[in-house]
Image 1 (spheres, rainbow, N blue to C red):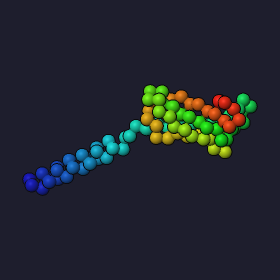
Image 2 (cartoon, rainbow, N blue to C red):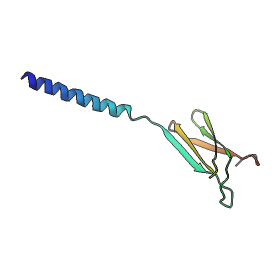
Image 3 (tube, rainbow, N blue to C red):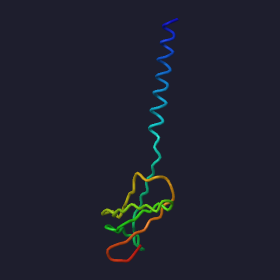
Image 4 (cartoon, rainbow, N blue to C red):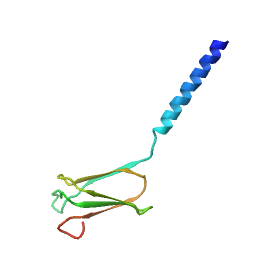
Length: 92
């Protein structure tokens, strides 16, 4: 009987551990990625991109890479707007 009780305790402890490990692994984060191109479809490197959370008005500033790509990571889920500004223009 004592062995069965210890076995049940071990099973319960393992179950609690698995549930807690699963809960901690579920962090709500989002990412947003894109490519900046001109009207002909050519990529534009070096564009300053501003990703703005519309709910909190917080912003992340990025710059496009040589392929015209940007990636904002670790964002809180929500609605975002994206603005771009190149060195040669006032806005994209």
